[in-house]
Amino acid sequence: MQHNEFEVLVKEICSKQNLPEALELLKSNEDTEVSEAAQSLVGQFALADVENEKRIYHVTVQDNDEGEEQEFVEHVMNEGDDLIKFAAWFFESMFEVKAKDTYQIAGKTYKQPKRS
Image (cartoon, rainbow, N blue to C red; front, top):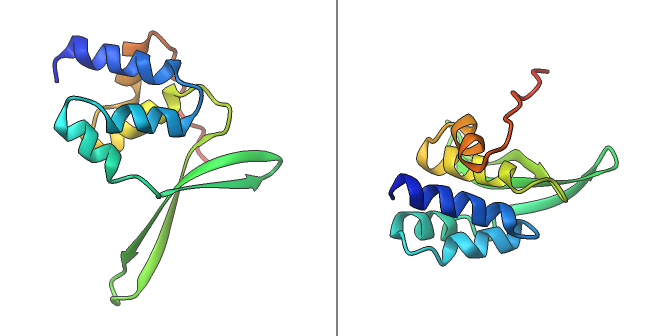
């Protein structure tokens, strides 16, 4: 994917209303790698009420060292957050593009996550 195509795609993602719409956009992308990566995520998101927030999590099941299935849960964003968070998560998780770079492409300010 060319740099200008990546920029257009990130801005398109940010223009969507919610994560399902953004995922649909990615699934229909002309770039096969992007569309296949997006397709692989279908059905892996969960919404949970945590501390009065509607949080969106990416949930996967993998075998641990003992061969037992273990659920892995990663907070992606909150419902209603700017979709740049999803775009940054997607491109970092699937293509190792730094979140800071995705934010920069979209003309948004990246804030380092707080360490707990």
